[in-house]
Image (cartoon, rainbow, N blue to C red):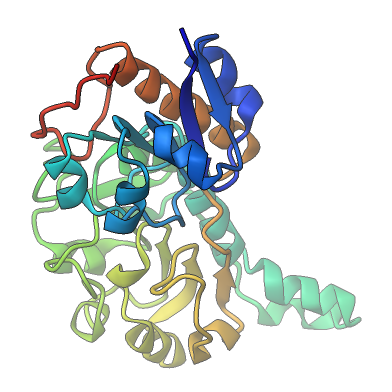
Length: 315
């Protein structure tokens, strides 16, 4: 029996997926048109498009596994119409992203950039001019209480922070729930965003909401770039409503230059907080398990389009 073909779209570590896919599968990291024509599975990086054109070039495809949870660049309707489940990997990067949130929070609250400049520039005697904040005793406001939001709460508690959470879809526990987003903003020393991006949440954090934040709050977005209106964030920084902004995500990506990026109280990373070495290995493994499950006729652990009828293996 000839080997099944599973292809990669974007860089995927073959060592992380080979054993999981099994000896009957040939994993192709740089597929040709001929490989796509016979491929039964695909492991797709987050920045790669899966559209009608790709699906036309891969007519035998039975499963698509996306590294991560965002499917903005995947045509779910087209995949569902062809009976192709789109596997996602929701748990693999959660801890890494949550660590990124705390890293940005610490960087901004502890004022590491201006303090580094003081030492580097020989201005030691000016150190009292830079106010250094605390996490101990501060309030972490979490917008979106899924896997990442919950982990942020666990890490925040380890620093002695109080946690409040807002999520109308997945209600947080009663002792930390804050049903009003404006009230959450007004009570939080740090506001971190972890809700999905859709029509209802685009520019969720805008001029109106930022007018309600606790003066001097830190804002961190490691969720989706479109959740935050950058113009409003810059205005809030300039008047001191916010004391710092941390961004790992942008809209669009790659990020287009914005005046906010030049503000000294802003820290930026290129959508990498969930792409640590360990997180990527776990993501690739979860994606491979999803592909292996579908090819073996088993239901995968997490699917973005669960209503589709799975395409059967071709002879």
